[in-house]
Image 1: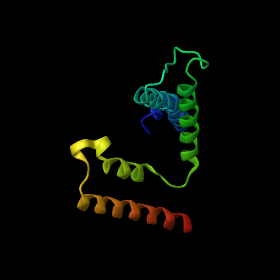
Image 2: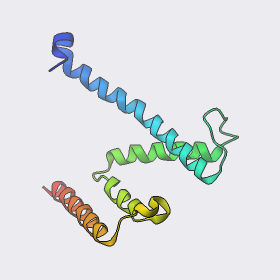
Image 3: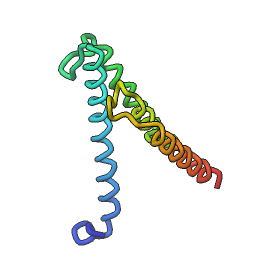
Image 4: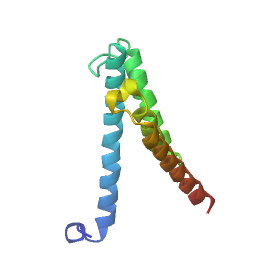
Length: 124
């Protein structure tokens, strides 16, 4: 509604194009940041300044993370909560801030609850 004074009847179209444009910017940024993070953690050569022949693993991560991101958009479930639970339990990632047993149980119960809600939504 805020775009109506500027765009008139095309306000919904302008807003929709803005959302699509934002997604088109986010996909390569997230894929590139994932490739930099994994390459750096593994000690691999990788940069967008390198040709693919010089950094094949880096560009493979860019391609795979782009495909995974696109695939997750079409999946009926959101795996982020489960991935976060797996991460917060690992002391090699979280160090001394890793989740304790009681909080882990509550977290997995919340994850299960969300999964049941998605399943119910799909069945209805």
